[in-house]
Amino acid sequence: MKKILALACAATIGVTSFTACDFNLFKKNEGTAKNIILLIGDGMGENHIQNALTYFELTEPRFMADRQGSIATKSKNNAVTDSAAAGTALATGQKVNNGEIAYHNGKNIQTIAELAKKAGKKVGIVTTDTLDGATPSAFSAHAKDRDDSDDIVSCQLATGFDLFIGEMDDGFYNNYEAAFESKGYSFASSPEEMVSYASSDKLIATLPNVRSNYREDTKYDYQLKDIVAFATEFLDNENGYFLMVESAHIDKYSHNNEIVNALCEVRSFFDTMDYLYDTVSEDTAIILTADHETGRLSLAKSKAEVDNYLYNSSGHTGVDVPIFMKNVPYTLTGTVQNTEVFEICKKLFGLT
Image 1 (cartoon, rainbow, N blue to C red):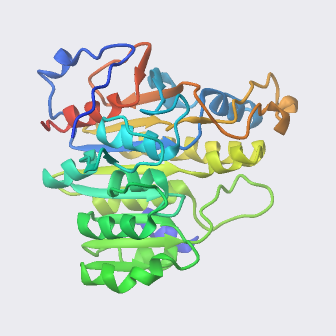
Image 2 (image 1 turned 90 degrees about the vertical axis):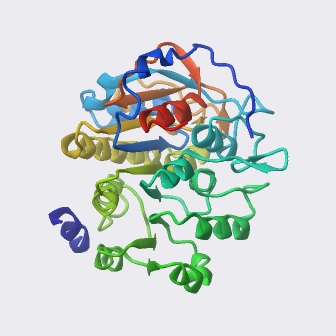
């Protein structure tokens, strides 16, 4: 609780992998994870990570020793995915068309978060984007189109998930405050208010300015690490939990070719991983990956070379992204499809 107080103060579609997973390894290890924390760096390619290390003059963080190959990100209808299709693949194990949210061919597709909830686990969705953004929606909603925000919120209301934390969105979610409260949620609009509801059964929080403090232009009272600390404590229970965490602004800054701001967000992800490595128990599986790469970023050889000109695009690309796993009794090799993440989570929870 000290960490919380500190915060206050401051239908199946066939998919073939490039490398087949040998899940025989799981036959004696099914259900080994009590908790799963899946972290997604939106737009974060390998060179985003390497350039952040160079810019901040860091040695490799501990999580990089748990590198498990790469993830291919193409969607069902495009070699270059959008976040909706990529998030859906991670969440459901199925490829869909760009723009679709856990939905394809007129049918909703069950997500790992929904499966975890049905299995009696608590579920949390944390994002630095708005909660109707593509990635959080892919885990918590179903929609024909990622822009169908009203449909997305209606789905989220029906999930019964225990925790939603996202960025404030000019009051859009405030329109649903009464609806969430009728479902048993406490509704918070500041980190202090969020912390005051730490003992609530269910909570939704929309917070202002969820940005990295490594930026030089401004400073904020709370960071992604603090939010994740709150979330893991809020969700902790004897039956376990599933927590999805998205760092969204790596992608947003990369679309604008703002490399320093993007790398600051990556650095905040490093801090979040350090916190988790220091605090979680061995029965908590940690998976870190990205939904896609944004910007086709070149690699700087020195801090002086870190410049916006390293971007070769302002859009998403088909570049493979890295995956890191801790407390997972399985080793990936080579490149696998993004749908494998769902399969791994399902096996870790012993779900069928």
